[in-house]
Length: 172
Image 1 (cartoon, rainbow, N blue to C red):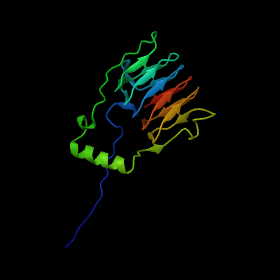
Image 2 (image 1 turned 180 degrees about the horizontal axis):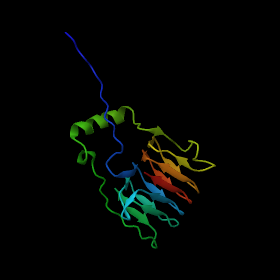
Image 3 (image 1 turned 180 degrees about the vertical axis):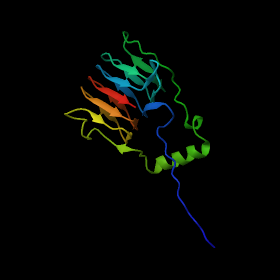
Image 4 (image 1 turned 45 degrees about the vertical axis):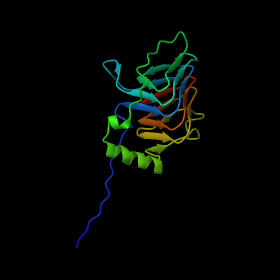
């Protein structure tokens, strides 16, 4: 009797197609902070998803991405952001239930995909700015601050995401 056992891996680039940034908690932006995703014909092709709320009530931050926040958008009177929606779509809208279960089990066992970063990663203090072409993740909160330029392929933040100062965040 001959038996062959093989392991197959299925790669997932982002949580859902078109998601540039996913935060499990709140996203706070102040100052001149910006989140920029790719555009096509001047329109965003990426999305910013927040499991909490998106807070842009300090300064004049900008978002070039569709925004979805479970608990809505909080902004100052003079800001003109348009909240695309409050429904963060479930994964089974994009993947079959068997794959959702596999991904759920894998994330509970070891929640990592790509490069693990934190606020102690070089570039999150002087000199500010990072360049990651692939997916990045953090297992806690992340604070993108001051005048740096932060380039990510995709970014998964388990906790809260704060973007402030003159920080610029690009997701490809």
